[in-house]
Length: 351
Image (cartoon, rainbow, N blue to C red; front, top):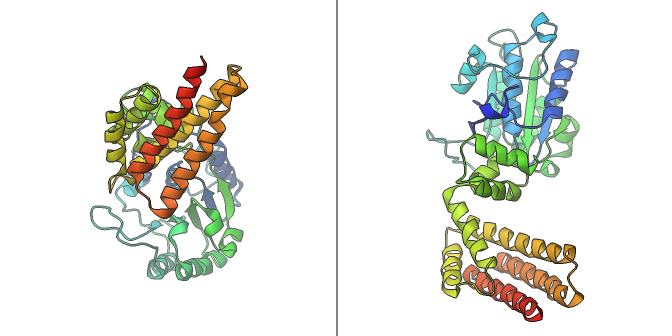
């Protein structure tokens, strides 16, 4: 397998490195070498954790090495295929005749133009599978993601899973497996991908040159839920500005600059800043939790600890009601800053 230093945040169909998920990769390789490869796999995990990267990695391997008994595979320890391999080049160019990707429709720029995977798209896959493989080997179908199917398209796919053609394999990606038809889940072998450790995510960002500094990468990794893809989005300049702005206020409370707090709340509360607002709520909640845990570890008195559970409850309720009732996000943030400031002022008064 390519090392971490070779990692870049390439599109899944071009990425030759897989970060983490060695157990899942080993399970696919062992199943292939056994000669009893199951025809459908449900690759489960959070968005951005590497499901598509693993699926394309396995597709390249199958289409490059169709015979599990080939001598060159005897010592294979992973599913790595060189970027210069003809199959890898074809897949990058989206020109491999034995691979089809089932996903929501996109325009020429790759922008998604449909809300679901349509039944017509699934029927095109059925026609693909009804023809002979261009090379006489495997035919691979990647469904990215199965969550995007409606009932009609899911039922159409189910028919193919029930009667799969020979030397065909389905790789279904899902962020929320519980939303899929039970009959689809029952016909797939499950392959869960666990969230990656924070330090692995941060190192991946560093190796790819993403993030302003190690502190920003560490914060993005911690907030990513173990997803390199999500961490990369959190490490962009706008997200880093939000992270630093929130911590500049919280770390100075109650002696923070109220004008800076007002400006930040207004920026995060405006229309179009929903993602950054949600990032801010996560940062604030994490800060309160860390503050409470630190007070406990330091042996703080009951009087010092007393306000923080109530702060957590009030802040959690404020964020939840704002989301549920579509309340003014700017005013919610300012209210939360006041709640935290009041609790911290009580702490300082007791020192």
